[in-house]
Amino acid sequence: MRLWIVAITACVAFSACGYSTSIEGLYQASPAIRLDPGATAFYMELVTSQYGPEVGGLVHLFSDKDFLTPLGTYKACYCMPLENAVVKDGVFMFTFELPGACIGTKKDIVFLGYGFKADTKRMTGSMKWRNKDDASWHRLDTGVTLIQEKGLKELTIEDKQCQ
Image 1 (spheres, rainbow, N blue to C red):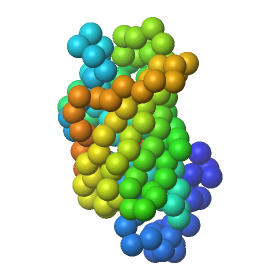
Image 2 (image 1 turned 90 degrees about the horizontal axis):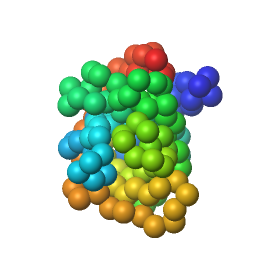
Image 3 (image 1 turned 60 degrees about the vertical axis):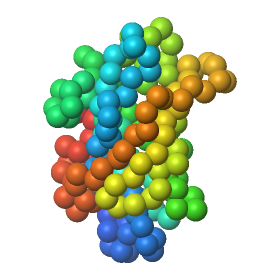
Image 4 (image 1 turned 30 degrees about the vertical axis):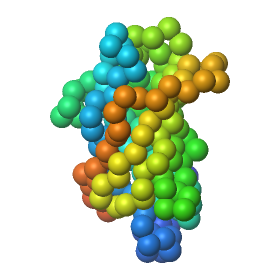
């Protein structure tokens, strides 16, 4: 966690690390994400900081569209690290893992966000998911839009932590 805070501080000090478009701040996704009609829907929030092509941060998941009620009853359901997050050729992509019990499935789920045209305010892309021990990906029925709600300098310590 301290390394992530140091990376954020370094990026602010060096003007967003030299990239003309940086993926930094708090982004909320729309619409709700649902794997299938029987699974629990959830709302996704990304808290990010970019250093060069790499993006670090956290994924927060909520059960309500106002992003107030954390998903599930334990921390692993509503806060996890953003993984494999990069900006390449102006496109943002990332992964994160979610325990299946959090959304009513028997197996842990890996999510892949891809095709998000790197923009500071609004990015639209797609998401796929797969069971953690399975190789085949399934695409979500709808696209996902990430809208920046806070810039990097507006983030609070609570935004940057798993509570």
